[in-house]
Length: 372
Image (cartoon, rainbow, N blue to C red; front, side, top):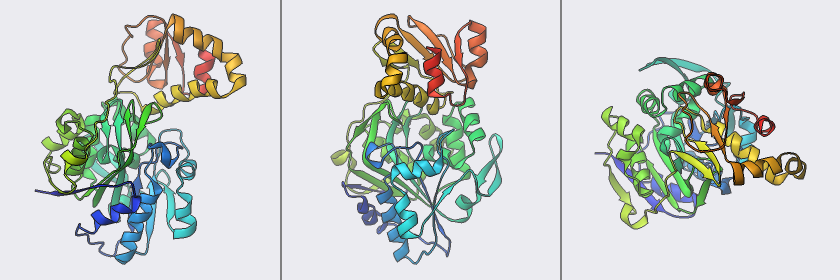
């Protein structure tokens, strides 16, 4: 049996109370922290790991004698990691705490064997004391995104694309088999429910922190705190079959039944706004859906864009209908209206079915608007 620690709090430094209960041995290694900083978003958004949770972890390990700290991320495809760190408020860690903020796309990698052949893992994740700090969020393709899903930010862009071509859940579980954090932590002070994990979701003040050594136990606990059965999360179910941890760990601290908060799950068939439909596809990267969101927000927030694109967009959304399709193994939507395919994975599908297509991986939001 493994142990998972839960605390209800709105204070980031509350993570120290959990870490104090866990027996950790650094072995003279540097501390590598992998947050979830997938897009340029503020810590108040609930989309990214709160940098003050990361600071509290650093303070804890500094007291344990650690002298070298690295915070690393490989954000969503097409995103600039330093811009992501800046928007999330991480730069003070570099300026005031002497922490290195690094792009995992640039560091040395070690090739390891896994189910699908070989995969290149950041050397720093394998040779440091590795702390995985995820968010408490729902996900349009994987039901939840917690510490196992957060490890997708360890891999290169080409491998991320390959994950989606494989169906996402199985490779997420298989990755957890070959690289495991020394500590798995969930920052759930602010979460995302509904059509997560990005801007289409809803911010929720969940006031929860979770920590443990068992990545499966931590994720199963995170799901239960969202009042989601962990066995309904495909990658958690697969990880259990692979024997990667304890799906029923002993909970220490606050009891799940007393502090859980019901998260609304994503609509796993469509994202819908009026007569706009974005068909869900687990073979599609969430960055494609994010490009669509950015396109709509650009029209809403920019008068010049509104006059140029707004009337046609409004006509499609409120009157005629418009379907957006992305990802491999795409299917024709069963909703009325215009259909637009976007992203490189739909190129052949669009050609075969005589549909409009927007290139890019992910596509540029302006190109989506132009295609309208």
